[in-house]
Image (cartoon, rainbow, N blue to C red; front, side):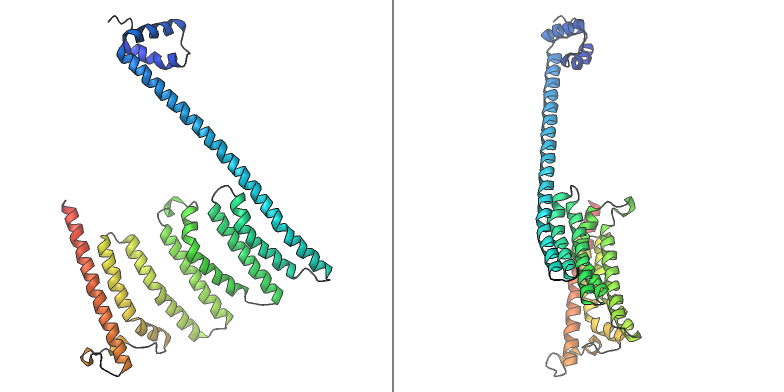
Length: 334
């Protein structure tokens, strides 16, 4: 085989040759070399295939982008048409409201109600990114607006109470989705679960506070409400911290949670009785297993059941903890 040029030189020229931007002398040299060199010819074929594949990918991306733009334009048009349709009952109600000599009173209720409908139909069609988040924000805002208009219409003073209640309920269901999809500072991106827990906890205490103000709660109310709420929210927080932050095996986490739930539930009545000053049912401290379940004393019977359930959960939890520790130990050895 008589190679006129070095292979490295020819392979450096191959991209220019395939793009047809090299000189005629270089083109001729490459062609003559490829006729004699199998290695360079295979390299040239590979480059050609890669080039064709890149062109196909570029064409595919262009088609997808064009289709996406077309779909966006289509959904935006549908959203505008839907909004126009929703304007019809608003205009009809406005005319009727004025025709019967009323001021613009219940018309605003209809308008706010249509905003709620629009938040669930128009917003997802018109918004181009983060549709779910904007739909939730729009629905929440329009719902609160409707409640405010109704409260003003009937001359009530319950708007803040109902608004906070709605925010708590919506937050429990929707806050995980919203926080997962919104942009967050770098130091909070791995703390989304913590943000959800803090957000829901704040709304819970806001509801307790608003209820106390609304009913004119006495110091006794605040003592009972705050204490009971802290005890009630403690268990979800403990479970969350164990699941999210304890660097132990999953079985160990399950065991710890099982034991804590057993102890927490068993002493719930005693804790609430101490916090509220009122008797909240049977106390586990009155348990007397020697009287077994034949006792006619209901308080002792309930206490015995609580004690047995607690012991059973602690026993089951301990088994999971041992299994988790043993599994992690074996994994560390391997």
